[in-house]
Image (cartoon, rainbow, N blue to C red; front, side, top):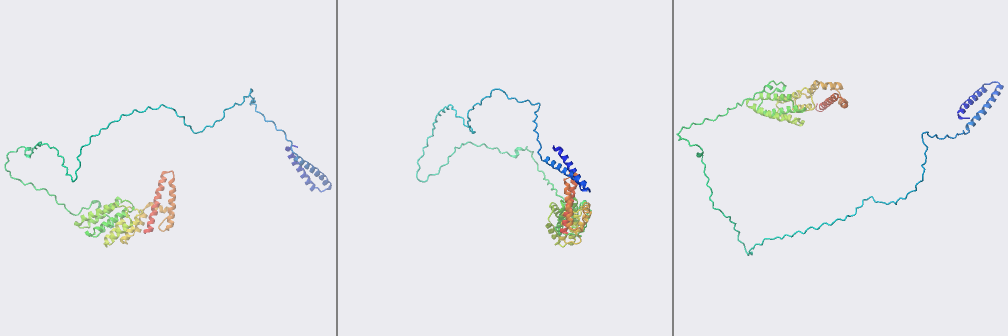
Length: 419
Protein backbone atom coordinates (compact mmCIF):
# COMPACT_ATOMS: atom_id res chain seq x y z
CA UNK A 1 0.00 0.00 0.00
CA UNK A 2 1.45 3.40 -0.87
CA UNK A 3 2.14 5.78 1.99
CA UNK A 4 -0.21 8.40 0.56
CA UNK A 5 -3.20 6.03 1.04
CA UNK A 6 -2.06 4.40 4.32
CA UNK A 7 -2.65 7.50 6.44
CA UNK A 8 -6.41 7.91 5.61
CA UNK A 9 -6.90 4.15 5.90
CA UNK A 10 -5.38 4.11 9.37
CA UNK A 11 -7.62 7.00 10.46
CA UNK A 12 -10.76 5.24 9.22
CA UNK A 13 -9.70 2.00 10.95
CA UNK A 14 -9.20 3.78 14.27
CA UNK A 15 -12.54 5.60 13.96
CA UNK A 16 -14.48 2.39 13.22
CA UNK A 17 -12.68 0.59 16.08
CA UNK A 18 -13.54 3.39 18.48
CA UNK A 19 -17.18 3.49 17.31
CA UNK A 20 -17.55 -0.29 17.67
CA UNK A 21 -15.98 -0.20 21.13
CA UNK A 22 -18.42 2.52 22.16
CA UNK A 23 -21.42 0.52 20.89
CA UNK A 24 -20.12 -2.60 22.64
CA UNK A 25 -19.97 -0.77 25.94
CA UNK A 26 -23.38 0.86 25.56
CA UNK A 27 -25.22 -2.36 24.31
CA UNK A 28 -27.49 -4.08 26.84
CA UNK A 29 -28.52 -7.31 25.10
CA UNK A 30 -26.16 -10.30 24.99
CA UNK A 31 -26.95 -10.93 21.32
CA UNK A 32 -25.88 -7.46 20.34
CA UNK A 33 -22.72 -7.77 22.40
CA UNK A 34 -21.78 -10.99 20.54
CA UNK A 35 -22.26 -9.33 17.15
CA UNK A 36 -20.20 -6.29 18.19
CA UNK A 37 -17.52 -8.57 19.61
CA UNK A 38 -17.16 -10.17 16.20
CA UNK A 39 -16.80 -6.77 14.61
CA UNK A 40 -14.17 -5.84 17.17
CA UNK A 41 -12.19 -8.97 16.41
CA UNK A 42 -12.24 -8.28 12.66
CA UNK A 43 -11.26 -4.69 13.10
CA UNK A 44 -8.38 -5.70 15.40
CA UNK A 45 -7.08 -8.06 12.74
CA UNK A 46 -7.34 -5.28 10.14
CA UNK A 47 -5.48 -2.80 12.32
CA UNK A 48 -2.74 -5.38 12.98
CA UNK A 49 -2.33 -5.98 9.23
CA UNK A 50 -2.25 -2.26 8.67
CA UNK A 51 0.63 -1.78 11.14
CA UNK A 52 2.46 -4.69 9.55
CA UNK A 53 2.10 -3.14 6.12
CA UNK A 54 3.44 0.13 7.44
CA UNK A 55 6.52 -1.67 8.79
CA UNK A 56 7.41 -3.18 5.37
CA UNK A 57 10.10 -1.28 3.42
CA UNK A 58 8.81 0.57 0.40
CA UNK A 59 10.05 -0.27 -3.09
CA UNK A 60 12.41 2.45 -4.30
CA UNK A 61 12.29 3.27 -7.93
CA UNK A 62 15.50 3.72 -9.89
CA UNK A 63 16.44 7.40 -10.31
CA UNK A 64 15.88 8.84 -13.69
CA UNK A 65 18.99 9.83 -15.64
CA UNK A 66 20.03 13.49 -15.48
CA UNK A 67 18.73 15.16 -18.62
CA UNK A 68 21.34 16.84 -20.71
CA UNK A 69 20.67 20.32 -22.07
CA UNK A 70 19.60 20.36 -25.66
CA UNK A 71 21.82 23.28 -26.62
CA UNK A 72 25.08 21.66 -25.47
CA UNK A 73 27.13 20.12 -28.22
CA UNK A 74 28.69 16.74 -27.55
CA UNK A 75 32.43 16.89 -26.96
CA UNK A 76 34.52 15.18 -29.56
CA UNK A 77 38.08 14.22 -28.86
CA UNK A 78 40.44 15.57 -31.47
CA UNK A 79 41.94 12.95 -33.72
CA UNK A 80 45.49 12.59 -34.79
CA UNK A 81 48.68 11.27 -33.36
CA UNK A 82 49.77 12.23 -29.84
CA UNK A 83 53.19 13.82 -29.60
CA UNK A 84 55.74 12.19 -27.38
CA UNK A 85 57.10 14.25 -24.40
CA UNK A 86 60.10 16.36 -25.32
CA UNK A 87 63.25 16.27 -23.23
CA UNK A 88 64.41 19.51 -21.64
CA UNK A 89 67.87 20.60 -20.50
CA UNK A 90 68.60 20.03 -16.82
CA UNK A 91 67.78 22.82 -14.39
CA UNK A 92 70.68 25.06 -13.49
CA UNK A 93 70.52 27.03 -10.26
CA UNK A 94 71.46 30.68 -10.61
CA UNK A 95 72.22 32.75 -7.50
CA UNK A 96 70.14 35.85 -6.88
CA UNK A 97 73.17 38.02 -6.04
CA UNK A 98 74.48 39.99 -9.00
CA UNK A 99 77.87 39.01 -10.28
CA UNK A 100 80.55 41.47 -11.11
CA UNK A 101 81.16 41.78 -14.82
CA UNK A 102 84.57 40.76 -16.01
CA UNK A 103 87.20 43.43 -16.10
CA UNK A 104 87.74 45.06 -19.46
CA UNK A 105 91.20 45.67 -20.70
CA UNK A 106 91.93 49.29 -21.56
CA UNK A 107 94.89 51.06 -23.03
CA UNK A 108 97.44 52.33 -20.49
CA UNK A 109 97.68 56.07 -20.07
CA UNK A 110 100.81 57.68 -21.40
CA UNK A 111 103.25 58.79 -18.70
CA UNK A 112 103.29 62.52 -17.96
CA UNK A 113 106.23 64.50 -19.33
CA UNK A 114 109.05 65.25 -16.94
CA UNK A 115 108.91 68.82 -15.64
CA UNK A 116 112.19 70.74 -15.81
CA UNK A 117 113.72 71.50 -12.45
CA UNK A 118 114.14 75.16 -11.60
CA UNK A 119 117.43 76.41 -10.19
CA UNK A 120 117.04 78.66 -7.14
CA UNK A 121 119.74 81.29 -6.63
CA UNK A 122 120.13 82.65 -3.10
CA UNK A 123 121.60 86.09 -2.36
CA UNK A 124 125.09 86.15 -0.95
CA UNK A 125 125.51 86.28 2.80
CA UNK A 126 126.59 89.65 4.18
CA UNK A 127 129.96 90.00 5.76
CA UNK A 128 129.43 90.54 9.47
CA UNK A 129 132.20 91.57 11.83
CA UNK A 130 133.17 89.15 14.54
CA UNK A 131 131.62 90.00 17.92
CA UNK A 132 133.97 91.51 20.45
CA UNK A 133 133.89 90.82 24.16
CA UNK A 134 132.37 93.42 26.43
CA UNK A 135 129.41 95.83 26.18
CA UNK A 136 128.74 97.27 22.79
CA UNK A 137 127.87 100.89 22.31
CA UNK A 138 124.31 101.96 21.52
CA UNK A 139 123.40 102.23 17.91
CA UNK A 140 123.13 105.68 16.51
CA UNK A 141 119.86 106.47 14.80
CA UNK A 142 119.97 106.77 11.12
CA UNK A 143 119.72 110.39 10.16
CA UNK A 144 117.46 111.24 7.27
CA UNK A 145 118.78 113.89 4.96
CA UNK A 146 116.97 117.18 5.34
CA UNK A 147 116.40 119.63 2.56
CA UNK A 148 116.99 123.25 3.35
CA UNK A 149 113.99 124.65 1.46
CA UNK A 150 112.45 127.87 2.83
CA UNK A 151 108.81 127.69 4.00
CA UNK A 152 106.33 130.07 2.36
CA UNK A 153 105.26 132.93 4.57
CA UNK A 154 101.53 133.20 5.27
CA UNK A 155 99.88 136.52 4.86
CA UNK A 156 97.96 137.77 7.89
CA UNK A 157 94.36 138.84 7.39
CA UNK A 158 93.11 141.78 9.40
CA UNK A 159 89.53 142.82 9.94
CA UNK A 160 90.22 146.32 8.66
CA UNK A 161 91.20 144.90 5.28
CA UNK A 162 87.74 143.31 4.81
CA UNK A 163 85.63 146.35 5.77
CA UNK A 164 85.41 149.43 3.60
CA UNK A 165 87.30 152.42 4.79
CA UNK A 166 85.06 154.62 6.93
CA UNK A 167 85.17 158.41 6.73
CA UNK A 168 86.87 160.20 9.53
CA UNK A 169 84.59 159.94 12.50
CA UNK A 170 83.72 162.71 14.84
CA UNK A 171 83.18 162.03 18.50
CA UNK A 172 79.47 161.27 19.08
CA UNK A 173 77.81 161.04 22.49
CA UNK A 174 77.05 157.46 23.65
CA UNK A 175 73.33 156.68 24.23
CA UNK A 176 72.66 154.10 26.94
CA UNK A 177 70.71 151.01 25.79
CA UNK A 178 67.13 150.58 27.07
CA UNK A 179 66.68 148.15 29.99
CA UNK A 180 65.58 144.56 29.22
CA UNK A 181 61.88 143.91 29.78
CA UNK A 182 61.22 141.92 32.92
CA UNK A 183 58.46 139.26 33.17
CA UNK A 184 55.42 140.43 35.05
CA UNK A 185 55.00 138.67 38.38
CA UNK A 186 52.40 135.87 38.26
CA UNK A 187 49.58 136.18 40.71
CA UNK A 188 49.90 133.15 43.01
CA UNK A 189 46.27 133.16 44.14
CA UNK A 190 43.71 130.42 44.74
CA UNK A 191 43.22 128.10 41.73
CA UNK A 192 39.85 128.52 40.11
CA UNK A 193 37.40 125.65 40.48
CA UNK A 194 36.23 124.25 37.08
CA UNK A 195 32.59 124.82 36.26
CA UNK A 196 32.20 121.08 35.61
CA UNK A 197 32.78 120.28 39.30
CA UNK A 198 30.98 123.30 40.74
CA UNK A 199 27.74 121.44 41.52
CA UNK A 200 29.04 118.50 43.52
CA UNK A 201 26.27 116.53 45.24
CA UNK A 202 27.18 114.02 47.89
CA UNK A 203 27.32 113.54 51.62
CA UNK A 204 31.11 113.22 51.34
CA UNK A 205 31.30 116.99 50.69
CA UNK A 206 30.55 117.62 54.38
CA UNK A 207 34.12 118.61 55.26
CA UNK A 208 35.62 120.74 58.01
CA UNK A 209 35.34 124.50 57.54
CA UNK A 210 39.13 124.89 57.32
CA UNK A 211 41.60 122.24 56.19
CA UNK A 212 45.19 122.88 57.25
CA UNK A 213 48.31 122.13 55.22
CA UNK A 214 49.24 119.30 57.61
CA UNK A 215 46.23 117.30 56.35
CA UNK A 216 47.34 117.12 52.71
CA UNK A 217 48.59 113.53 53.13
CA UNK A 218 45.31 112.52 54.81
CA UNK A 219 43.28 113.92 51.89
CA UNK A 220 45.58 112.14 49.42
CA UNK A 221 44.99 108.82 51.24
CA UNK A 222 41.22 109.38 51.17
CA UNK A 223 41.36 110.06 47.43
CA UNK A 224 43.47 106.92 46.87
CA UNK A 225 40.92 104.90 48.88
CA UNK A 226 38.13 106.24 46.67
CA UNK A 227 39.99 105.21 43.50
CA UNK A 228 40.62 101.75 45.02
CA UNK A 229 36.86 101.31 45.55
CA UNK A 230 36.21 102.54 41.99
CA UNK A 231 38.64 100.01 40.44
CA UNK A 232 37.35 97.04 42.49
CA UNK A 233 34.96 96.03 39.67
CA UNK A 234 37.23 96.92 36.74
CA UNK A 235 38.71 100.09 35.17
CA UNK A 236 37.67 103.44 36.61
CA UNK A 237 34.70 104.79 34.64
CA UNK A 238 34.18 108.42 33.62
CA UNK A 239 31.37 108.96 36.13
CA UNK A 240 33.48 107.61 39.00
CA UNK A 241 36.44 109.76 37.97
CA UNK A 242 34.27 112.89 37.77
CA UNK A 243 32.83 112.18 41.23
CA UNK A 244 36.30 111.85 42.76
CA UNK A 245 37.58 114.95 40.94
CA UNK A 246 34.60 116.92 42.23
CA UNK A 247 35.32 115.76 45.79
CA UNK A 248 38.94 116.88 45.82
CA UNK A 249 37.93 120.29 44.43
CA UNK A 250 35.62 120.53 47.43
CA UNK A 251 38.70 119.89 49.57
CA UNK A 252 40.63 122.65 47.79
CA UNK A 253 37.78 125.11 48.42
CA UNK A 254 38.14 124.48 52.17
CA UNK A 255 41.86 125.32 52.23
CA UNK A 256 43.48 128.72 52.60
CA UNK A 257 44.72 130.76 49.65
CA UNK A 258 48.38 130.01 50.24
CA UNK A 259 47.79 126.24 50.68
CA UNK A 260 45.36 125.74 47.77
CA UNK A 261 48.08 125.34 45.13
CA UNK A 262 49.93 122.77 47.25
CA UNK A 263 46.75 120.77 47.77
CA UNK A 264 45.97 120.88 44.04
CA UNK A 265 49.39 119.49 43.08
CA UNK A 266 49.37 116.80 45.77
CA UNK A 267 45.82 115.60 45.06
CA UNK A 268 46.37 115.62 41.29
CA UNK A 269 49.51 113.50 41.67
CA UNK A 270 47.70 111.09 44.02
CA UNK A 271 44.76 110.79 41.61
CA UNK A 272 46.99 110.09 38.59
CA UNK A 273 48.95 107.49 40.51
CA UNK A 274 45.90 105.70 41.98
CA UNK A 275 43.95 105.79 38.72
CA UNK A 276 46.48 103.65 36.86
CA UNK A 277 47.13 101.13 39.62
CA UNK A 278 44.07 99.04 38.81
CA UNK A 279 42.42 96.61 41.20
CA UNK A 280 44.18 96.40 44.57
CA UNK A 281 44.33 93.69 47.19
CA UNK A 282 42.35 93.95 50.41
CA UNK A 283 45.61 94.30 52.35
CA UNK A 284 46.22 97.60 50.54
CA UNK A 285 42.73 98.79 51.50
CA UNK A 286 43.39 97.89 55.14
CA UNK A 287 46.69 99.82 55.12
CA UNK A 288 45.00 102.94 53.72
CA UNK A 289 42.16 102.85 56.23
CA UNK A 290 44.58 102.44 59.14
CA UNK A 291 46.60 105.48 57.99
CA UNK A 292 43.34 107.48 57.78
CA UNK A 293 41.99 106.26 61.11
CA UNK A 294 45.10 107.07 63.15
CA UNK A 295 44.69 110.78 62.40
CA UNK A 296 41.47 110.85 64.51
CA UNK A 297 39.94 113.48 62.23
CA UNK A 298 36.34 112.36 62.67
CA UNK A 299 34.83 114.57 60.01
CA UNK A 300 37.36 113.55 57.35
CA UNK A 301 37.02 109.86 58.35
CA UNK A 302 33.24 110.12 57.99
CA UNK A 303 33.68 111.87 54.62
CA UNK A 304 35.97 109.04 53.40
CA UNK A 305 33.36 106.42 54.38
CA UNK A 306 30.63 108.38 52.58
CA UNK A 307 32.88 108.72 49.53
CA UNK A 308 33.46 104.93 49.35
CA UNK A 309 29.72 104.25 49.55
CA UNK A 310 28.95 106.82 46.85
CA UNK A 311 31.56 105.38 44.49
CA UNK A 312 30.22 101.82 44.87
CA UNK A 313 26.61 102.94 44.35
CA UNK A 314 27.39 105.37 41.49
CA UNK A 315 26.49 102.92 38.67
CA UNK A 316 23.38 101.55 40.45
CA UNK A 317 24.59 97.93 40.38
CA UNK A 318 26.66 95.68 42.61
CA UNK A 319 29.47 93.86 40.83
CA UNK A 320 31.68 91.07 42.21
CA UNK A 321 34.55 92.57 44.22
CA UNK A 322 32.80 95.79 45.25
CA UNK A 323 31.18 94.45 48.42
CA UNK A 324 34.43 92.95 49.71
CA UNK A 325 36.29 96.24 49.13
CA UNK A 326 33.53 98.37 50.66
CA UNK A 327 33.11 96.12 53.70
CA UNK A 328 36.89 96.06 54.34
CA UNK A 329 37.11 99.87 53.99
CA UNK A 330 34.22 100.56 56.38
CA UNK A 331 35.55 98.11 58.97
CA UNK A 332 39.03 99.64 58.75
CA UNK A 333 37.66 103.18 59.15
CA UNK A 334 35.52 102.13 62.12
CA UNK A 335 32.40 103.91 60.82
CA UNK A 336 29.16 102.36 62.12
CA UNK A 337 26.64 104.74 60.60
CA UNK A 338 27.21 103.30 57.12
CA UNK A 339 26.71 99.55 56.60
CA UNK A 340 27.92 97.73 53.52
CA UNK A 341 25.11 95.16 53.75
CA UNK A 342 22.43 97.87 53.45
CA UNK A 343 24.10 99.35 50.36
CA UNK A 344 24.44 95.88 48.78
CA UNK A 345 20.79 95.00 49.48
CA UNK A 346 19.60 98.25 47.92
CA UNK A 347 21.75 97.77 44.81
CA UNK A 348 20.59 94.15 44.36
CA UNK A 349 16.94 95.16 44.66
CA UNK A 350 17.44 97.87 41.99
CA UNK A 351 19.11 95.46 39.52
CA UNK A 352 16.28 94.17 37.32
CA UNK A 353 18.26 91.27 35.79
CA UNK A 354 19.36 89.85 39.15
CA UNK A 355 15.88 90.40 40.57
CA UNK A 356 14.21 88.47 37.71
CA UNK A 357 16.74 85.64 37.92
CA UNK A 358 16.24 85.30 41.69
CA UNK A 359 12.46 85.21 41.24
CA UNK A 360 12.80 82.61 38.50
CA UNK A 361 14.99 80.38 40.67
CA UNK A 362 12.93 81.13 43.82
CA UNK A 363 15.91 82.53 45.75
CA UNK A 364 15.62 85.20 48.45
CA UNK A 365 17.60 86.39 51.48
CA UNK A 366 16.10 83.66 53.68
CA UNK A 367 17.15 80.78 51.40
CA UNK A 368 19.82 78.56 53.05
CA UNK A 369 23.29 78.64 51.53
CA UNK A 370 23.28 74.98 50.42
CA UNK A 371 19.87 75.26 48.80
CA UNK A 372 20.86 78.48 47.03
CA UNK A 373 24.09 76.98 45.68
CA UNK A 374 22.22 73.88 44.50
CA UNK A 375 19.63 75.91 42.56
CA UNK A 376 22.29 78.13 41.00
CA UNK A 377 24.37 75.10 39.96
CA UNK A 378 21.36 73.39 38.35
CA UNK A 379 20.42 76.56 36.47
CA UNK A 380 24.01 77.06 35.27
CA UNK A 381 24.23 73.48 34.00
CA UNK A 382 20.91 73.84 32.16
CA UNK A 383 22.06 77.01 30.40
CA UNK A 384 25.40 75.38 29.60
CA UNK A 385 23.60 72.61 27.70
CA UNK A 386 21.82 75.27 25.61
CA UNK A 387 25.15 76.60 24.28
CA UNK A 388 25.29 73.67 21.82
CA UNK A 389 22.10 74.69 19.99
CA UNK A 390 22.23 75.59 16.30
CA UNK A 391 20.45 78.93 16.76
CA UNK A 392 23.06 81.68 17.36
CA UNK A 393 20.59 83.91 19.22
CA UNK A 394 19.72 81.15 21.68
CA UNK A 395 23.41 80.36 22.25
CA UNK A 396 24.16 84.01 23.00
CA UNK A 397 21.21 84.22 25.39
CA UNK A 398 22.42 81.08 27.19
CA UNK A 399 25.93 82.56 27.60
CA UNK A 400 24.46 85.80 28.97
CA UNK A 401 22.36 83.91 31.50
CA UNK A 402 25.38 81.80 32.52
CA UNK A 403 27.38 84.99 33.19
CA UNK A 404 24.48 86.41 35.23
CA UNK A 405 24.21 83.22 37.32
CA UNK A 406 27.95 83.27 37.97
CA UNK A 407 27.70 86.93 38.99
CA UNK A 408 24.96 86.13 41.51
CA UNK A 409 27.03 83.24 42.85
CA UNK A 410 30.13 85.44 43.35
CA UNK A 411 28.14 88.25 45.01
CA UNK A 412 26.51 85.88 47.51
CA UNK A 413 29.89 84.28 48.22
CA UNK A 414 31.26 87.73 49.15
CA UNK A 415 28.15 88.46 51.23
CA UNK A 416 28.66 85.22 53.17
CA UNK A 417 32.38 85.86 53.69
CA UNK A 418 32.54 89.62 54.39
CA UNK A 419 28.94 90.34 55.46
